[in-house]
Amino acid sequence: MMHLLTSPEAWAALLTLTSLEIVLGIDNVIFLSVIVSRIPQKQAHRARQIGLALALVFRIILLSVLVWLIGLTAPVLAFKGYDFSWRDIILIGGGLFLIAKATHEIHAEVDADDEEGEGSSGRSAFLWVIAQIVVIDIVFSLDSIITAIGMAQDIEIMIAAVVIACLIMYLSSGPVARFVAEHPTTKMLALAFLVLIGVALVADGFKFHIPRGYIYFAIAFSAAVEFFNVLAKRNRKMARRSPL
Image (tube, rainbow, N blue to C red; front, side, top):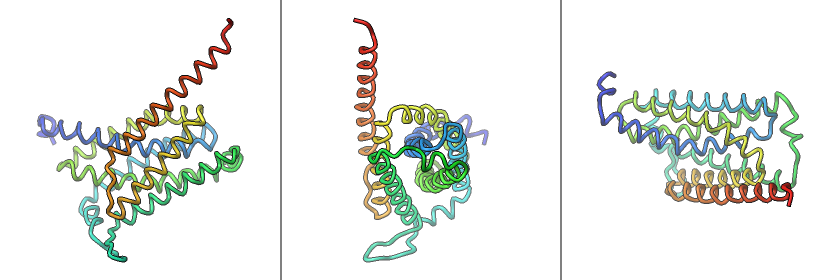
C-alpha cells in the first residue's frame, strides 16, 4: 500500500480513473435528479443520499469480486447468431428500463400531469423511487467497474477512484436536482438524455458500441444551448420587471 503513495504511475492511474468514473457517473446523476423530482423536497434529499450511498456500496462490492465480474463477459446465451454474457443481459435490461422510465416521464410531462400520483403517495412513492435507483445503480455500477478493471491493476487505486467519484457525484447531485426542478424545460432535456443513454446501453448489450464521446458531446452541446436559453429567459423576465 505504501509504495502506491510514492508511485507517480499510481497517482497518474488514480487521476485518470477518477476522471473516467466522474464522466461515467454523469448518467447516474442525471437519472437521480429526474427520478427524485417527483417526490417532496425532504424525501428527495434522503433519496439522493440513499441512492448515491448504494451506488458506492455496489461499486465496492463489485470490485471485491473481480474474478466473478470478469466471468460476466463469458457467453451464457446464444440467440440468432448473437452470444450474450451476463454483462450484456444486464446492460440490455438496464437500457430498456431507462428507455421505458424516461418515456413514461416524458408522457407525464407532455400530458401536464401534476405531481399528485407519485409525489403525494408518501412512503410508497419514496420506496418506489429507491427501488428504481437500486436497479439503475446496479447497471451503471457494472459499466463503471468494468472500466476500472481495464484501467488499473491495483484494487486500492480502483476503490479510491470510485470513492472520490461518488463523493463528487454526491456534491453535484443536489445543485443539478434543484436546477432541474426549477427549470421544467431542462427536465425534458434530461429525460431525452436518459433515452439516449438507454439506447447506448442496449446497443452495447448487442455488441454494437456507440463511442461515449459522441454521446457526451451531444449532452454537453444540448446542455449549453439550454443554459443560454434559461439565461435569456431570466434576463427577459428581469427586463420586464425593471422600470423604464
